[in-house]
Structure formats: C-alpha cells, structure tokens
Image 1 (cartoon, one colour):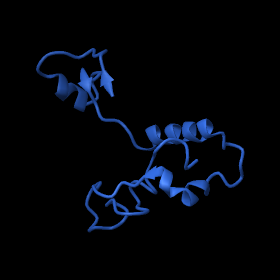
Image 2 (image 1 turned 120 degrees about the vertical axis):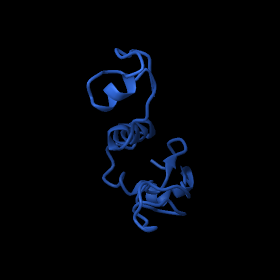
Image 3 (image 1 turned 30 degrees about the vertical axis):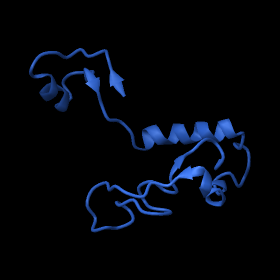
Image 4 (image 1 turned 180 degrees about the horizontal axis):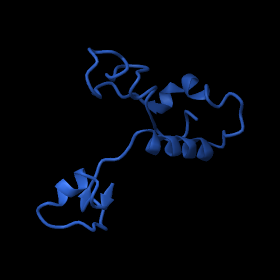
Length: 105
C-alpha cells in the first residue's frame, strides 16, 4: 500500500519507523498476512453470493480452474517443505492459489 500521511521526515525516518517510534511510512509499505487475506477472501465469497452454504469452504477445491495457481516463490527457509515453498497445486504458502474472479467461490 502507499502511505501519504507520514508524520516522520528527515534522514532518521526509517530508523524511527523500525523502532516503532514514528507513525506513517512516507511511501510504499508491504502489508499482508491473514490480516489482509481474510477480509479479501470473505469479500470474494460475498460477491459470489455463496456465504450461507454449509459446503462453501470446500467449493474452491472443486473449482481450482478459477484460481491462479502460485507455482514459485518461498517464504523463509524450511528445506523445500511445502509449508514455505510454492508449487503446483496446493501448498502451504498460497493454498490453492489466488482468486481469478468469483468462480471458485
């Protein structure tokens, strides 16, 4: 995301931000994890109109063609384990993939 409301300025800004002593980031910052992905996926289910189905959680497994499979990249180092390394099909970092519209939901 891009933060345009920095209360920090000058040469020591990055240092103060790293210590948590200043608010704002004065530019592009990386955010994510479940704090970002959970509301995104919840909104995709809502857009698909599939929020009341008991089987809504299993629906993406039957519709993987409507997902973009993330097949490369890693998050940390755990010896090539599926938990840290993306691969074809299901993997621990990206699950079944990223939404390509609402078809998988």
